[in-house]
Length: 161
Length: 142
Image (cartoon, rainbow over all chains, first blue to last red; front, side):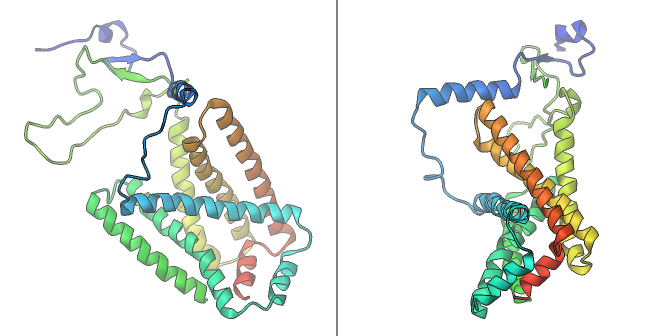
């Protein structure tokens, strides 16, 4: 039994048969949704406090967190270069004059490089997903563990340099 | 203006969008075909997505390259690619958490302004001061 939509005959220039254009855009619909819901002051169901955390979920938010933190660092650095007096070397000299112990410096280097390494390795994992690879649930967990191991190893290696 | 196309359920989509009707009792991976982007009003979003991936791969390559061959060209490339990658990422965060048209526009405008300033600052650093690659090397020698 072939069912043919009348629309296919009425508007053949539409690429897709059996499709009707809607009156609103996604943006407009989002706007309407939030306007209605923020003004109603409805209680929000618990979500992140009750949902069982999984490794992929935790790694995803860490990817975002490290990204925001790293961006903050880059922006701070760039803006400081414009606004603060003196040159880079003078600031380094100041830090040297504080005579911080080598273990503290080593820890600071590790703290700087750890989010960068995590974001980089997890970023590669993301690019693999964009290629359509490794999307099965078991592969998600496996690649996640690989990223964590690589992060720790590369951070230790770079901090030691 | 992007126009949403909706499956006309009354007519019964003959596999126009979603394909892969599983037979009863079948439990496997179902292949879904999403709407091809020729149906969207503009290619802007699609191009943006692709550009983001290109920048990601570039940045990934620049990290070891900057270590192996630190030079002025590397400094400026890093500055440029970083100030593309960061705002695009932060833009996604804004889209996710800032609701309402006016607030989102304001947040994105602020982000753009800060990013432009940061890029200027990084270029200034590369020009007047030691440059990004050398700065990292000096910091690491502490």
